[in-house]
Amino acid sequence: MSAARCLEDFRVGERWVSEPVTLSAEEIIAFGKANDPQPMHTDVERAGKGPFGSLIASGWQIAALSMHVFVQAGGYGETPVVGLGIDELRWLKPVRPGDRLVVEREIVEIRRSETRADRGVLRTRVLVRNQHADVVMSLYTLSRVPACPDGSSAGSSTEARKEDGSSCSR
Image (cartoon, rainbow, N blue to C red):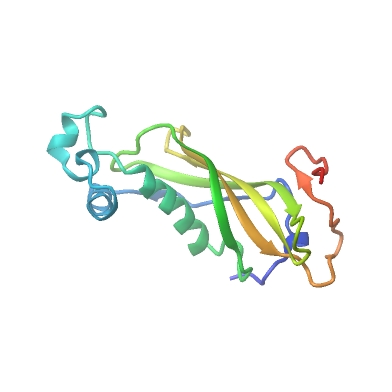
């Protein structure tokens, strides 16, 4: 796992892409029974007669999977990150047994806290794509990260930045 980073060490445009992950029917059913017990997620026969024509994964399973693979791969390393929320969560296409999923994360905004100088917020776009490169889920995460104790890092600027490179207005 990589060393801890602070706010000033992150960059807008920084990307991370997972290795492919394949969901089995058994995994979909187990998650559905435990967390989203609708027939489309838990019963192959009933799902086949439903609106999607087959068993599909719960959107919540895909959201959880997107976090799981990021953390398992080392994500932010030793950085103490606190999740603040999710914006614009969309489930765009069904995920079926055997689909190969890839999770993409990109930092789109970095800003200092307006009330606490010792921390800031990363806004990260998360996309999950299937084997056809179709986006099956999209969302933005908001994560609190600590600022560097002295407020700077090698080659960094402490002003907040957005996806287009402009400074955030405060």
